[in-house]
Image (spheres, rainbow, N blue to C red):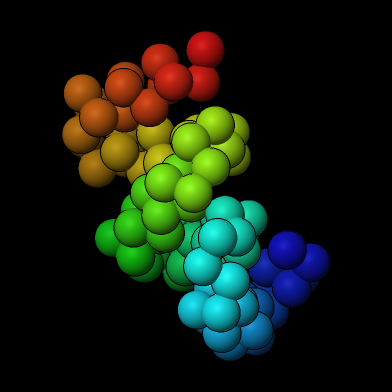
Length: 88
């Protein structure tokens, strides 16, 4: 997370990808990688990782909110509303 915030996104991605592959049940690593990819405009990949994180931990608030925002950004309003509803 610190690498992403400090603008070292490529380094964050390089460190997070092996972690995601090894830690199949770790939702947070998927969310961090999704955030890094999202910051680079790789939205489909980010969506996939947020969805993976939610399969692992269905109540992961960060994954839910960021996924809802990405759906909204893509004008997938029904999907966005569904995810926003899950937040409340």
